[in-house]
Image (cartoon, rainbow, N blue to C red; front, side, top):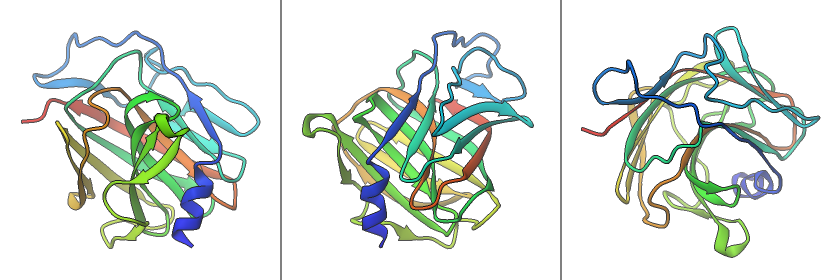
Length: 216
């Protein structure tokens, strides 16, 4: 079932693009970008349609998926990130536990990027989407969704951390490393926060306390 639903998730993609107002002024040393989502800084463009929406609410960047088999993301600015450490708090606010949420990175376009996703029922996946093959998905850490006890299930908050250095990626949830991968297909690209539905719509995820910094 995990593989079947993973393929279905890639069937439709909504891209919520960002603008180019990023600035490094006033940031702590080593920090490339940070956001508490308490106010609209102008670094994110929040678009909505009948199937998905993105908005600032309750001190979060919230994504809501109102159609089945859909993934949507909010993209950060017109800026490319190569090596970085990303940390963000992700909370399942409502909807089915059979969902997907996390981070897309080194995004070239809607058919070329990496993603690290967890689910409300305690699974995770690391994937690559390939533009050269019409947006085909490839697994780069394992060949299926895998279960992890590190993931808080249901309406809970999970701290997601990704360390990207060259072709090596490490993935953490709640301060526990749960996966790593090596891949050199994409060397840099945009970063986004994503949420997805499978058979049942109504997924709503809130993101908070985003920090993107230089690797040590």
